[in-house]
Length: 268
Image 1 (tube, rainbow, N blue to C red):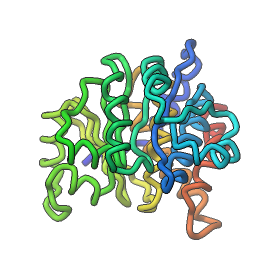
Image 2 (image 1 turned 135 degrees about the vertical axis):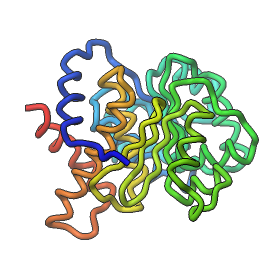
Image 3 (image 1 turned 60 degrees about the vertical axis):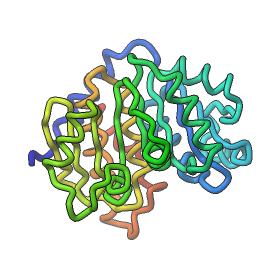
Image 4 (image 1 turned 90 degrees about the horizontal axis):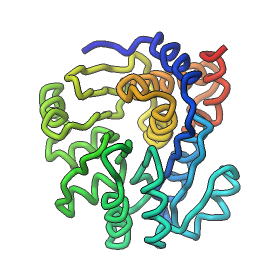
């Protein structure tokens, strides 16, 4: 399995200078018990790109959302008209962090899937994968990225953790034409061209939401999705590695807070 090279960061951030049009990001998630997950994801996405971001979440999260990320727009994700409009006008959509998996959550995801189109990047993680598995939904025909830890992937793919191999994951990827990220100590990346990459840097098992947001943010900086996802995975590990030299444990929120600092390191 090939390792992601640090040089990928230079490649992506040189591309940033060529990016002209703003890319809108929408993050959908955070039920009454899952606000922290959507906050971390949305903040990570914004800090990774500076592009306009809308957070669609439960109205109970509004005060805490603005306290964590005053730059975001907000919509109540139960308003299907507003949610559908936001999804239709986004370049990158994230669905799942803290969403929950009850019937109301499933209805929200239905709106996302119904309004996501072929020319958009759709990132599904956390509860979205659980809802799709339980409801029998087909995976949508978009520029699709799936993010899961090993336990979540075992449930979603009906493959026990001990039976998850490079071949089984690569086969699933090819069958569904999706980029797959398996979050583990050394996060693995399965690309559409059949390439399988791994992050040489270790990350904690609790930082999936910060990684998901970083993937969303960096994806807006270049049309080469494979490269931006690889860059996000490496940068995520790099930031945690640098922080771990002076702090333990490395909290996901600390990773997110330091994104602009380390982005600057690669854009000088």
